[in-house]
Image (cartoon, rainbow, N blue to C red; front, side, top):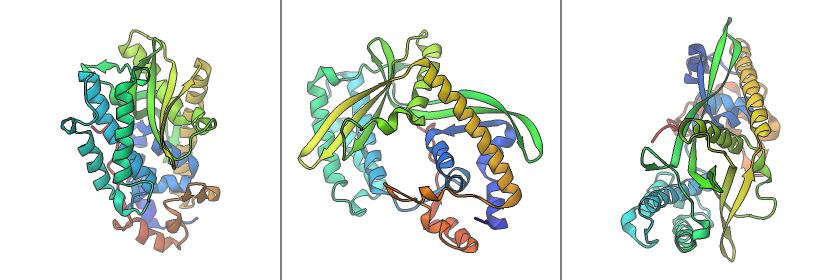
Length: 335
């Protein structure tokens, strides 16, 4: 794919390129995965930070569920006696507010709307409040529950060549852990996942994912920094499934040995080094090679399918039109 000088200018002036020039690149799993899945998608999302103006129902629904769970778990951790029907705690209001921002009810998904949202949260919270066996022993950091715990930690340093200059680039890995818990006398990050399918293969695509390995890497760093080098178990997936017959809730444990975390760390550092090299070549040539297998997956069309499927000049009109794609200021480090 060939891009216009105007597009190249925007990438050259982007915050991503500027971080490289300054020698410190902060990247989170979502951004990393866009670059790693398809370099062209990375240019749109990671480089320009432009995202689709229309929300997608699964993401919008999942975001609203997270907002409600986060509010409830913070209150529960502090009081231990939060009643699931107590509107004063605000979890309903925060879940609905998040759904309003993404216009969840206008997305036309019968399984993902505010009615299902509240039913799912009410069912989960009722079960959670009555069953000590599924409750989290949530750590506190600075006397605050470690819920929605942001982090930005050093991943490593590599030598890179960018725009004719060779220097060391420090890579910072950032993210936000849903719950940082004490599980079997070890630290275990917990990640909430909403799904419509949950079986024995549910965790297959998560076990080797950068997201879960990155959470464990971050937990190991935090263990040394804040928890007297407490052992780290791995990651726990808190799955909230929406079945035709009702809701199902289940925890999936993914323990990680040290060698897997070390291998992921080395691979990710090398991958980011290759990414910087590819970006440097792109700025010189104006040509990008997309991963066409990513254009349509089992989850549907890529969010940038229509952009890529137009001539270069039309791509500029579409990607820089805020009614189609707007600049996202989201960061896992934002409160």
